[in-house]
Length: 179
Length: 107
Image: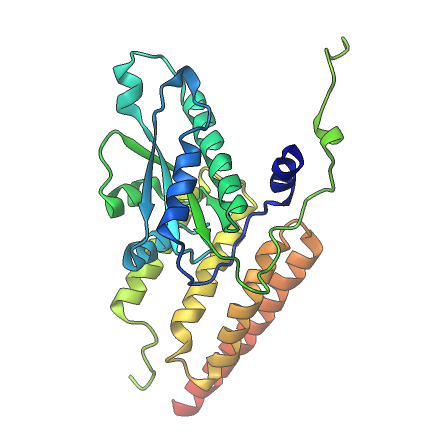
């Protein structure tokens, strides 16, 4: 089982080209259910999800999201609901909530991959335009879209790596030496 | 005016939305994303124009639609990226000349 989990992590890729094929509702719900288990600072759970399947709304979203190359059949918008943070009188920084966004995003993308679906994150969009298009409550800030769908045949590979790296390049063991 | 209109008002507004959103998000993104956003707008404008464009532009527009997504992925390879952009500059210049010469002919 552990090898299956690790293999799911290793083989997930950001997919930028998807087909029109619909995603089953139960799969979308499974992905959202997985996200519910993502870690969250202070166990506050300030993250909220907005699922968009309507073709016209998805089209409008793409027009204010220059980074959304996919024409995905399902978009899941990850929002921070600042009202929840205020309710708890917590002095959480933006950074803490953004960590929650990242944890939720990766959890959803891994869940999608486990279900045989393609996914890709998008943060390059106008937040103000998205608030208008989706009529978001005032306390919601839109942070990241997760595009869900089926990988297009012959889909191009993602952006080429700037530099070949391994986990060793990213890791330092123990305390740094004094300069 | 003898030339074709190649965009509807709605399509033009859609392009405006993309350009304005690109301008805003660029404030939060690395500088090298700026050409990427301009190219995305170029690709979408090309797709919108293609259906109604004249033969003077069609091949150029089709080339943009096919070439630009590939260029996005090559951003980390500066030489390839620059070559791709230079290619587009040459092609758009040739397209300009085709339009310019036909304008002169009709003047």
